[in-house]
Length: 451
Image (cartoon, rainbow, N blue to C red; front, side, top):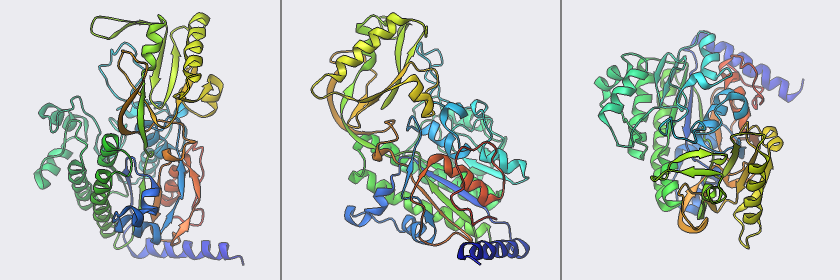
């Protein structure tokens, strides 16, 4: 008998015995937005203390790196993490829908009805498992039993009307019940580490009171800090230390629910790159007459426009407008010939489709990782900028790598899965739950484990 077969049989026997003698094993999936595994690997050199994340690394399986999706931004990535397919297929192609005339008033892809394929929460609920969520992206209207949605309409912390919206859009009565027990929930665009700590408290409360088999939890303070101060900055490391404590808190709650046993995963959506330059690509297109502005700088008409950030889709209003296409190509050629060109490479429409991103784009302009996309309509088109962190660049850039760590019954200790594809995460988690995930493009990276 091979060692692998023997291990699989032993794990099967262990899981069957556990199912008969103890409570069901929950799966908790925690996203730390912007978390790059290199920070954990280099923790000693960086002087950052991450005991809980390190414990996950040693006690369970981990990817050395996770290759992300095109584009490497939050909403497409988080949807891939729960579907196992690329953005062009699941339908969440950027953080915000394409809206050149801003008719949607800066709305995001908040609504689960825009996801075109089955999700992990669909698969779990279809198998009769209780599901829960605290702030995972694209969950408004999701078929989740206990759902605290991610939604805002202001950037004012703890905005009263946003609090009412969140209550209305989440599972009826859920937030009122939770707040009565543990205090106010963060509302509005409130993504500080302190808000993460408060949200983690709601996840713990959910595990204690609703006892889900599958819970999603989202933490974003690290991403926000890195946007301001850059990756692995002192501020970012301080935030990550605080989030590490929340990982321990959530794991302890999950294991208490499972009678000492739980599947516990930490994932991320992308890393960060330090940027020191800004490209105002739409200003270059405006100078060519490809879009028009009103007196307040809002687009009133367009033939070609850039949509996105570190990798930006060029959208043509009329795909057959060859004059507009030629003008775009001329702009890109000029930028490419600059002594310090901001462009890493240009993807054709066919290449973008093959990469699973930006359906309908005429081409994709991928910036170098030190250049962020600027939205202002003013000269110069390419300018020095204050150092900040950013993402959205091509997933082939190592700085954009995401993370995956998982621990639980039957998962071998200190198992290095190597580099995996982000589309592998959802089928791996589905296998731990023992549920099928129809249509996933990735594969289970822990085939010897299960319920």
